[in-house]
Length: 269
Ligand SMILES: Nc1ncnc2c1ncn2[C@@H]1O[C@H](COP(=O)(O)OP(=O)(O)OP(=O)(O)O)[C@@H](O)[C@H]1O
Ligand SMILES: [Mg+2]
Image (cartoon, rainbow, N blue to C red; front, side, top):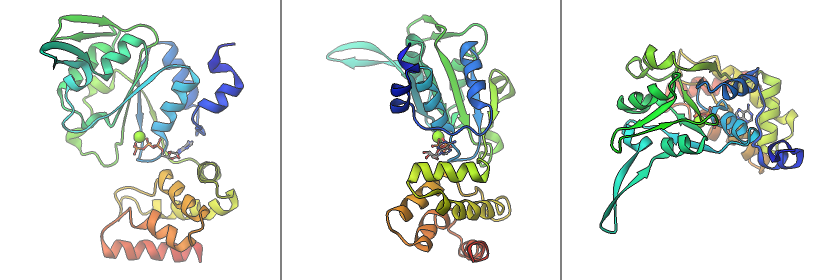
């Protein structure tokens, strides 16, 4: 039996991820057919954890890059560096992933500079090649290589959305917060707080999420719920933990803050 399927190793090494739909199945199909995958969804809803879980489950190495607005194609592909008087080529994370046949995960891909799409396009159609302009090398991606990218369509402005010619090279799956009972299980498992004490927090998160769009840019994430439950589990008073993990991170506006506090009173009584 391959190590990745050995139940003991599996339990020890595969990061915990609770599916919310058929996303694991889709990932396996995409991986088996060399198709790139785009994950869309709000912050803190499990996209990064999902990729880590799937890579471990498939026994595939994972290279993750958090994209930012200064990230260039050369940061991904590599560059010549001076080493002891010599100029040597050093692969970037994308090139390493292609050579190794690994999964490359570009988080917040829309943040990256426009020249990044030039290297992604030939890799994400049926050519599956990475041309290294500076060295003249053209690397053909082996079957194990997979490109996964994610972005949050919520707060990124239109100028930063992906061009159709880029997004239509990917299969796409939308992530959202899990249904309440499942989210309570996730929060409990991640924080150690008993599930019955997580349920009211999840209910509160649902009420706060309903304000998204009117007063708030983003609703409370599962990540913040886990923080909140972790504080309570380590002995902090619930009201204090909610303030630190579910109110203050959402807004700096005193009026909105007051409105959020009212939602707590109404929801938790
Ligand atoms: N389905 C899930 N199964 C297990 N844990 C989850 C799940 N969803 C969220 N979490 C928890 O929420 C935390 C945040 O998730 P993650 O970092 O994957 O979010 P993300 O979608 O990548 O956010 P961002 O867009 O900000 O990078 C995880 O560390 C984990 O504790
Ligand atoms: Mg992430």
